[in-house]
Image: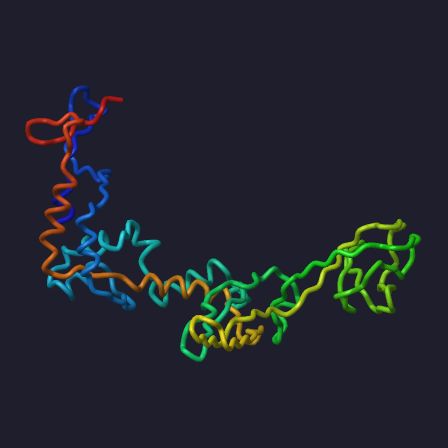
Length: 305
């Protein structure tokens, strides 16, 4: 069916001048027209099972494996090697080859779905919060993803090189453990009024009004509205709750690849009464137009190189 619909093609015999060889024009590609939208809209969902192929599904659903191409066309599958789901054994080999011993290490942390009291989704599942970056802390069993917050403060007094204390104009919002950008891994160990103590000496002198950036890494949280009640368009009650790191999911490399492979299993099947229409559509689309050199037999002639 599909192969028969592909038009013939004459290409030069490079050994004999003026002679051509007849073949199928496998390079002929077409894009489905809008009429396929109705076919797709009326199609039925199908989950590909392990070991199933396009032709085995076509045989099971339509009684003829030759209709395999209708499944590929409708789902825009142009390469079954990369766009068709792997079997369990193929998946294991793929994971072992690509990731080896790292396959069970975390790839990222993502949200789970959270709904309010009226069953409305307030936080979608699958939002990536943090990628694995190789930090040892991320491999700890109870590790919680962090969110970086930045604070800018100003030095109000002179601090000599080698000092472990800095006096600021204000220390509001600062906490013990916050990190300074003066040098790597310099942290606040104590706060006394406007004076902060750090765990390492400063590497250079700080002059009055010198700007310092402070960093803080906090556990991931997200506020969401749990319930809203309105009376005559006016909000009478509004409850906010916080989604914490406990609601996140750690996704390994294997988990991630498995989810991608499973998504490929969900396809659409054309209804059997549309198969002949799809075949006619394919034949019409495959026909050569008059811009090509066409023989009386309907063969396209290759351009001379």
